[in-house]
Image 1 (cartoon, rainbow, N blue to C red):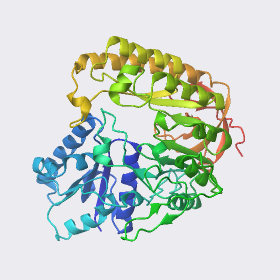
Image 2 (cartoon, rainbow, N blue to C red):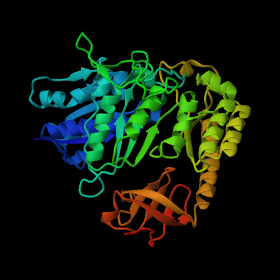
Image 3 (cartoon, helix red, strand yellow):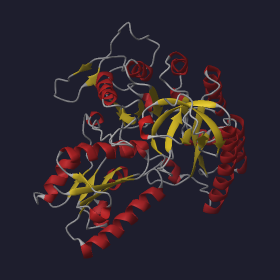
Image 4 (cartoon, helix red, strand yellow):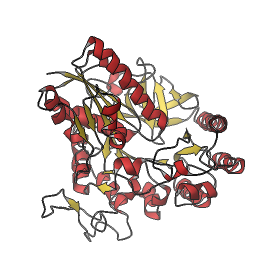
Amino acid sequence: MPSVFLKTYGCQMNERDSEAVAAQLVAKGYSLAPSEAVADVVLLNTCSVRDNAEQKAVDKMTNLAGQFRKQRPGVLLGFLGCMAQSRGKELIDQLPDVDLVVGTQKFHRVADYVDDLLAGRRDKIVDTEEERGSEATIKEHLLNGAAKGKAVTAFVSIMQGCNQYCTFCIVPYTRGQERSRSIPDIVAECRELVARGVKEITLLGQIVTSYGRRNSESAKVGKCESEKDGGAGRLSLSHSPAFSPATSPFVQLIEAVHAIEGLERIRFTSPHPKGYGDDLVAAYARLPKLVESAHLPVQSGSDRILKLMHRGYTRSRFLEIIRQLRAVNPEMGITTDIIVGFPGETEVDFAETLALAHEVEFDNAFVFKYSPRRDTPAAAMPDQLPEEVIEARHSQLLAIINEIAERKNKVCEGRVLQILVEGPSRKNPARLEGRTRANKIVVFEGSERHIGQLMDVRIVRAAPFTLYGDPAIVNLN
């Protein structure tokens, strides 16, 4: 069978989608190529959140098409994901050497489409149509872990789409409306992963805290009903005594996953500040497998900009959530996303973002330069900022974030922290890497037998975003 190389751009949702596509291809007998240079099929899973991400994918495909046209004209080329969804046939018009364009609700069709193209049954394929039930099709896992196929962590997609419509964001247009899987379906996938050796699961969604809110009345459930028209199962309303009426569908899901024997840790990303109700905050205190780590995108420290962004919360509400989380656990690791240079952002607005960063003292932050996305409201707003202003603000905020992160990491020196050992360090494969419950990366000396273990490590040195453990590991045996 032919070999496939799949390159992924963008977020963890894209990584998860790529893994499922790769697993589906492997199940059909395809092999995974180590690079595009030796592959028979090259697929780029794309991102549209920023213009730079789209341009990288287009440039990559342009280079590949030119190279293969001369050297290996039989290689099949395809775009998948968000940019494919957004641009559709336009991509083939722009790059005639591209054979396949598959949108965000059609990942499960990719393996069949590749079969058809290689067999000559079809010439070009563009599929960006909506498909009911597609949220339940991203289930397959490769679990190619760090050592001998032993994976320790896994992502589980719990929903697709987004209904938030932030004015800067293209995701609702590329991922569609929110569609949630049933709790039993998700739990079954998680159980299978744990049975295969996974110790930590990260629940994924565009806005995971919106899970279940559009299905039937909510996902209070448990059971999955089959619709008369043969569509995918939907979440049905249940008044099971296992759940409090005040408990959100997302917290109900966490409770159900928490009950899986053998699972050690639960994470989730990305939430929305609007989804942090009292029940979710309380869950950190009563569900020990839910680790003390919260990625909470704030985007701006200015109420005026937050309103223009259509974020649905204020600066004071965001700070209250942070206060509540740290009241539950002072060790809570808190990270965020921040956009600088949003249209109309003044020096005063930016100063409020800087002040928020100082006040919260995030453990880390992803700082993004505003990028106009076509057909989004922000792209048509007045007072678009010059690139040099955006660059300067980005550098200034990033320097503050890095300084705070390093200072907070320094506090860990001399402490003993529990980590889950994931495998060889990505930067130095001769050493091992794990994460604390608060999601700090720890690099240390160890052996392959420690992969998958929970162990205590004494921190001897701290860098801005990495901790280093003493080789004299506590509980080594």
